[in-house]
Image (cartoon, rainbow, N blue to C red; front, side, top):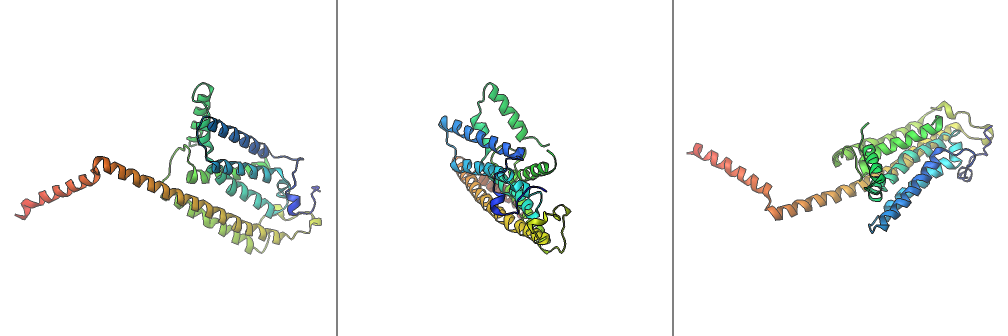
Length: 280
């Protein structure tokens, strides 16, 4: 017996102090560090957008909620709860963290002298480098994989390679249909696909096939709206950066008289001059 009551929303959201995951501590430490760093930046007279703070702290709260409540325990028994937890870890939390720009906050809040210089050097080398057991290890895997996918798409801090917007757009639209495909497979399956969740406690009265169909519906309904929000934010940034680039080119043209256009016109004149002797 696992000692759990029959599943309900209220039961799952209950704080579970008996088996806290290390990810709860990670979420709390990251939230405290971010709040402290944000105040250091503002104390120096520099602005830090409120929405970045809201996004990052929301991600930390979500991490604490899905790993510190009884969602963690029910996730070992029910496929639908397991799917909800890991969709949150891989799809909801990573975009919130990346939109919070923690790497940029670290650069602005840490002193560039003394020990702070060593901290920055270590952080930059980690950000620009290429290269638990059981349930907790899987949670860390989903969280890390979500971060690895979303960082090249939305990150504003230092990265080893800055992919073009067209390349990032391709990555987004390749990944989006996967949730629909997996969700449909789970919802249309005629037998349990994972043996891990086929024997929930009998007193819960859980239908294993209905629970698997609910897991499939979560993949579809949870994954697509999050992906849509990411696409909208990505498109807004693409449009903003295009406008900045065009404005910079216009300013450059005003200063040097559009040297690129002049070079092209000179090239056309040279072609015309080269053709004149032949026409005679």
